[in-house]
Length: 197
Image (cartoon, rainbow, N blue to C red; front, side):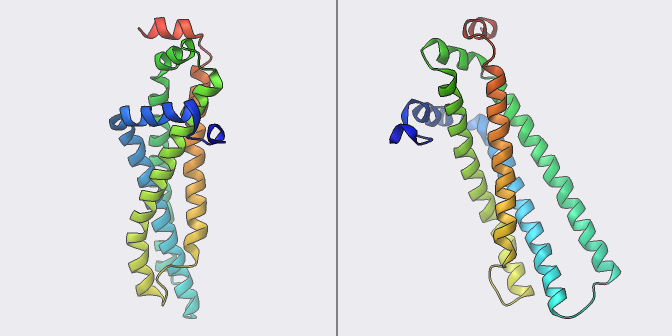
């Protein structure tokens, strides 16, 4: 049963070892994930709380309020897209750089599926860590804003926004890492080891 879990078996052991060895290199990827999660979750949730508070008061949004809402969405969109591109570039570079490592693992007897399992396990750990830390950072802004604008501590909108943001973060992290690893694994193992040496 342990072999079927993402962090079980040889792939899981290698993933944990690689994460410990490459902690400095992975810090940039983790920071991108944290920023993506925190900024997107906090800003989108606070804008939803503000819109609901205005609607509950029976007031009609002024032109200035609508312009501010549009500006918020534009700024968040630009930041989120920039951080997402930075995340994809960092993951692509970090995974492409490992061509020799993947070749050595395959020459030592690892199947391509096991190498992909290592990359998937690493991506899963990064995603969970980044989303958790980003969520805590987002809550630092969402909770005080919600307390001021409504009677609640946590807004109803938070869960839906968080699910969407976490889904995008997981898709980008795991998708980029696995797609890049799959491309790198097309190089024969002997050539990967000798060309990178």
